[in-house]
Amino acid sequence: MGRIETQLNTPAGEFTLLRYPQRNNEILRAWDAADEYLLNYLSEEISGKPRILIINDNFGALAVGLNAVKPIVQTDSFLSFQGIRHNLQHNKIDTQSVTLLNSMQPLEGLFDVVVIKLPKSHAYLEDILCKITAHINSDTKIIAGAMAKNIHSSTLKLFEKIIGKTTTSLAKKKARLIFSNFTNNKIVSSPYPQCFEIETDNTTLKICNEANVFSREKLDIGTRFFLENMPDSNRFENIIDLGCGNGLLGIIAAQQNTDAKLSFSDESYMAVASAKENFKAAFGQQRKANFLVTDCLQDMANGSADLILCNPPFHQNHVVGDHIAWQMFNEAHVALKQGGEFWIVGNHHLAYHTKLKKIFGGYTVAASNKKFAVMFARMG
Image (cartoon, rainbow, N blue to C red; front, side):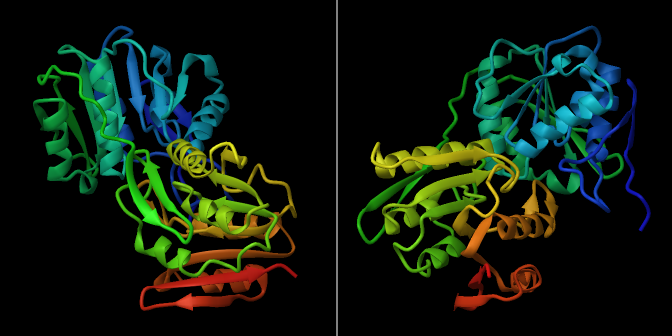
């Protein structure tokens, strides 16, 4: 396989764009045809120096290409956040030319142009559209972009419902643009976070989830199976919920290990915010925990954990693959102390057992049903 393309040609010039983190033998570009379509369209249709908001820029294609107009960029992804910074620096662009906000930071003022790279999550898009209604008017240009296969009738109906009159462009390189006018002319409150309750051995837990958190409305069946087969209680001192989502695995582990120190890690700002609120709701001031928005276990000390819990994701936005699982498993191997255990749940077809065997030298199946397996590997 040849080298992956890194040079993005835009109306504003040619830029080098890399994914974050940079990996050896990378097979994925840091942008797609929808980014190119958006940049070409904006160069033709937008003049002067409007106040531009960019939402969900993956690794900086839009921020870098539009840096001359000093855009405000908001994302829920730590990896995207860091990727944008790295690509600005790599192209010798003043990082102060782009204002970066994470998804939990509020927007301010009115925008002349809102550019949205469509997220995978329908709920996250709904949250985005609701929140921008307080920052747009009838003159605001709202343009969204995605690969055509990821634009559905439900996507367009959501724009129509919240923003107003919506049309689409012709497809180019299998990408398409969405144009929406704020004809509804009313501020819409986001329905997120959403909450549900689950029963545990000791209590009823109320679990609340921001829009971009997996399984917002109810407990997903994989996590439910994991909770039914958690490791033996009250024998762990330092527990990490890796890729924590709403933090439920770590919260249950905290209930079962009354003196343990808990850490929650995820690359989604909304996930970590949800985990923090849910932990506080479960324990009040009685327990403390660390909450980290980061890349897997990058901020964890080597050999520090004796239990790591993980329900690994198998996609990053619209990209499906096992590279995240490989990274999680390798970093868990480094973060565990001797005798520490790495517990995961996964669909059988994902074949996580082969990764555990390769990295840890072996594994144990704690429980299995027709769809899922709960497995663990031990250090040493």
